[in-house]
Image (cartoon, rainbow, N blue to C red):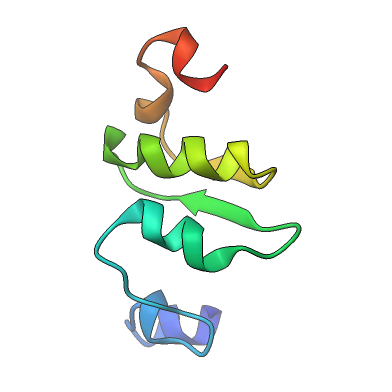
Length: 76
């Protein structure tokens, strides 16, 4: 993946990449144990996908606090 990024390519175009129209759909296709969902957006539009990932026991890594700036109850 690092080589692809160094060449200016999208992660979606790498061997393990995939393009989806919906962040929640990405969580649906991941479906593996020990999946880590990494959100590098600056948007709260990924919140439903993050919720779905956490509900399924996946881990989430955020590069931005925006999804966490909403109501506390969102992630309970």
